[in-house]
Image (cartoon, rainbow, N blue to C red; front, side):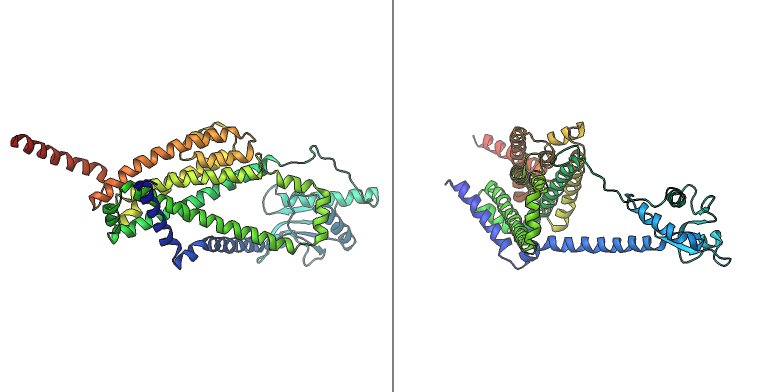
Length: 430
């Protein structure tokens, strides 16, 4: 092993242990739990708010006692065939006290969408909004009662359904998988690659980076830091994969064996789940992990190169903000490509180097072609090498110059006059 590679692995092991062998790393590992908990809390609150809003709404029918059972039967029959269930039906017996539909619709404390009164042959429907779905439903309800009475009691039917396809995964499911891959790679890359800047800021503050620069080549320091954070990212992913597999095994033990046997006999649902991505689960997961590594190296190299130009934590945060905004833009571009596979937007996102890992991961869910991913990996590897080369130059100039500002240019300007003065002194001595 050459001294350069040995130094790189020493720095990588040092950074890896400096992060992993701390109590705060446990909080870092459990960060997704806090994110999921906050998301569930927001979802539960929104669901309760939606449920309370739905509970306050109603439609009212003021009917004669002889029509109440027929209205309820028709309402139950119509709701089973609707994709969006209407508001709860409130049936009232007609009387001089509560028979005014306008008064019922304007009653405070309840959100009444429509009120129907009068005979079913010529009902009067008072709507909160003109031509609303609630008013049309009440008219449909009255017509259904009249048709049921004219034709007599309706007999139950047992329809036989025939599907156009025998199985497989729909395009919508594959696009959802593609978007999920884009979101996971983006979230993990942004969460883990940003840690490189935090460690760099700490080492620049306590002058450790200067000691490393004096001991080993700065290129080894840069690549070692990048490799060490990649190891932390792989450990993070491995931890949650083990947790997910353990949770799946525990959930499988709680399922009734008879239900599993019935699902195995059916076979169709299981086959659809196994072949959800167009390229198959093994290839989809493997290529997704490869794209994550390339995306991490791209963003981590940029963070290290730009972060080296700052002299304080505040400056690092200010310099990291444009990179984060740019990465969010790449996520939006890749998400649009995942929702429109084969479009010009998708092709652009797959070629553009910073969005290519995310967009190609989404393509693996909707397109069964596998050879194109080898070309994409080679294309992205070229850009990873180029970005690392430029970031190493920025890293070297930023670490050796000290202070703040973009030293890549100021250092060159400072070195040029010094070199000219040294050359002049040498010529005079000769």
